[in-house]
Image: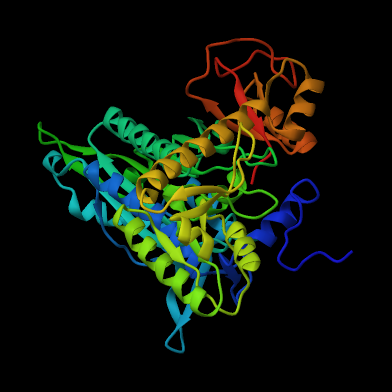
Length: 484
């Protein structure tokens, strides 16, 4: 039987196909004309705007200032830090001609901005009084992507990138952890994700960093997503770009730098953390519309319910609820219900002539969890603003609980290789590992699983490596899982 063109592939049947169905049918994105690019449509961009606004407020509250740096970077800048250029070389877009002529020096379209910002830091910092220098940039970056997937891996994406310089390593590490805490709070409080903060193993570090930290949530197919990373660069970039300061003794010292970023990949993570076979499920904090009102009726009755819906929307908006009235006359109520389910709106209100006469509206939640689905409930129109503020707060909390339960139900502590293989096939394995790159590569080759992080909250533990049996290297268990 042919599937309804508005339906989506079930997650259990093909999770990747489900994801593609959702991002296009919910009108979040469209494909760009260049391979690997995406057009973010208004509904999808509004989700990003809400996330961006929250992150930006938190960044500014910690004393950072926004700036903007050039898109084009001289190729020679990229070559100053050897590990950095080696790490990014396969992903670079390079401009060789401009104005009809070949350039004397090729220009790289920024894959990240450590190099250009490092050059500016060297100009702006002269004394210890100039430190710390706390910068943030909102920008687009380009990295060639062999296997593009909307939001998750596209050649061009949007992000913020924080870049800071400090007098001491201790200050720079404290900044790195401050940014990690900021990301953890955003992911849990705003995106309702169940993220685990931790440190990357040496093989998973950012190119040129001394230490890399991450937050890792589990998607509903059991895979991990690197949702935000923070990097302690030590003095690597300071040495390459001459970022020095005159200390109190008058001698020049190298600065210690950091960088950290969160991108539109978070929108993809949001989809895969909460979505179901009906489409998107959005946490109220990031829903473009938290409540949609569907007036029902034709002719004079339709005019009456639409007018009442608009008045109700004004009352809800005054209470701080993002509200939309779907008064599209050419579409049936049933179509609208399915459409807003696909788009993940947390609460839908139906307002028909009988409801209006009774002074009520029918409320439908996008999702229930941990209790029977109550179906549609009649709520008093006059009390709707207060009731719906409480409902949205509970919906946000419910999604967080659901994400935590799913992650915990699909995370297994393992002590044998067969247990490890079984665990990473459906979720995460907590395992000890020797720390040797060859062993890590062997695990990946046999299972496609990688060490996602060394959890900061992990309990101290020693023992044999899950793969080779050698003594473990990290003093605690690592999270292993397949990833995006």
